[in-house]
Length: 385
Image: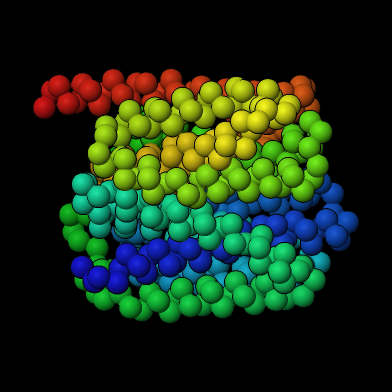
């Protein structure tokens, strides 16, 4: 194995995180300034998730046909085109829709293949730490996107040029990988289940991914709305979102270290229980409790842990093309959760002032129920062995 493979994959993941973190708010803010309706902004904001679901449906077929480096370079080229054309297309809703869909397709394939590749390179003894490094790199760089916008503004092409240069550098770093890193072996070319089969085989892992994408989209899109409706100022509401994302970023490495030393399915359940507890208490916390800020930090960490541990457990259970198919299933569910989160939570928020805590609590409760089943299954497999 080329010793540069893991650093290259981490750099590519970081660049895709910056790309999404910068272009999503940039597109939304430009649309708002141009007089687009909330519905139009919402539809365009959901298109990258739709593109990711399309990527999941194509991933297994493409990975059998092309070498991984070819796929990564093609995907980054699609992302680069989708970013570079944002400036000339800024006044056309249809052109922007096509570019955002293309962005989701390219990024979706990169994320799915990166997670599968890192899992493949990791030993089971250090799998938790390896995946935690990856998720930290992606989440941390995603947070840099809004910072770019705050520094460079939305009017000119500065943000687009910066992200385009980063994508070009990521494309070039893939040339550092040699043929031993990109060839697909014969035994890896056969898979034993389909995307739908993955949903039946690993419901706990599926719910972990689905819950986190639901949570992530709700926090980014609707938490500031919920906070301001409860008397919090806009600046403080935005800071609350940053604290949640900071908890997600900072505590994945300790969770990954812990996942290599304790039963992973039990730790997965513990993360779900933590989110359920804090989510159910959110209406009380936001009313003025001194525990609010540390609980928001812990909320982000535990929610991020449900995703990190799901990817770790996928790598523990699957190999070869089955691993690619499982990660593609995770990508499909991530896109689905990103679409469902704002839709379901927005509807509940219209019906009740506690709609957002209700949505998070119900989603976390469903995950906890399936995670309990995962713990029992893990104990059964251990007893059988």
